[in-house]
Amino acid sequence: MSTSQNLPMTVMTKIPLELYMWWEDLGESGQDVVKFYLGGLTGLLKISPRGDIIKALVTFWDPAHNVFHFSDFELTPTLEEIVGYIGSTESLRHKYLVTPRAVTLHKFLDLLKISRGVQYPDLAAGFSTPQFIYQRYGHIGGFNNPESKIRSKGNQLKWEKHRCFAFLVVFLGLLVFPRKNGNIDVRIAGVVNTLLTQDKSTLAPMIVSEIFRALTSCKAGGNFFEGCNLLLQMWMIEHLCHRPQYMNYGSTGKSCIGEFYTRVDGFNIPEGVIEWISCLCSVTANQTEWTLGWLSVDEIIYMPATGPHFLLMGLKSIQPYASYWVLRQLRRCQIVPKDEDLSRHVVEIRSDG
Image 1 (cartoon, rainbow, N blue to C red):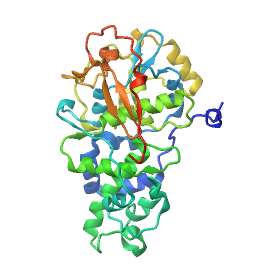
Image 2 (image 1 turned 90 degrees about the horizontal axis):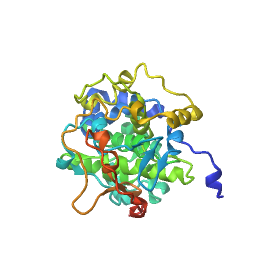
Image 3 (image 1 turned 180 degrees about the horizontal axis):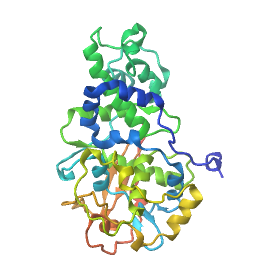
Image 4 (image 1 turned 180 degrees about the vertical axis):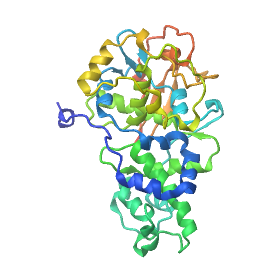
């Protein structure tokens, strides 16, 4: 057994204080800009990370079908559910699916409006520390410090605009697409650039793909969950919060994540990995909240014309997605799915493109 397999699995368990401070310092106008592009994802700042839930869930993950297998049923995060958390009310059919692109050192600096003369060896390796960006855009000192080498030419309005872009990069790099060492993949700057320049774009496929990859990696012995654990823990809790009389099928819009704790108020959330595993072992189909009450699904992404599953491109892999395994989650008649090993369709992506 390798050394990495002997190490305990970890997840992102603490949102950096600097990110909270930066968010507050953006002010209402800056926050509105960020919300316009991220939608309800900004609500993740209000969610407390729960590593015990993620560690327990890995036990039930089936990499061959990209679903969780429980006692007598299966569940998996769907595109529609993730879109709902983001707060979009428009069908995925009309969305531009954001995918990663190779980003060179110079391209990264150009997107962040930082001089190419900056000497920072980590960028050549394909990542940036949050501090590298925070020192330049996290507070007014970055604008006033000539050593920052930012290309705002003394124009604070330009700097304010650039710092919203920088916040988007750090937010996604820390909370949505986290790395084990807490650094940020430089390709996320390219992802943010697409969000800003491409109308009706969505991160949902990338988010689902990275969650699937992280679960499979940790199931195989990986020691860090490189997916959005915050969304996954919320998703699982809501499906366990069974309320037979709750029939609110109205969208919560961009406040979906922010209202999470209100929706699950009164649900006895287990504490610790052992309690969670015990809970998940005993839960049955009739104790599950199959369809999230706030999710209004008029159209669903079912299957492409080319075959029974889609391929979702994330930062680090391409993952098969077969919603026919969990049609009941989307208020559709559940069919008996074809037993096909989907893992053979997984493609790993090198960070250098």
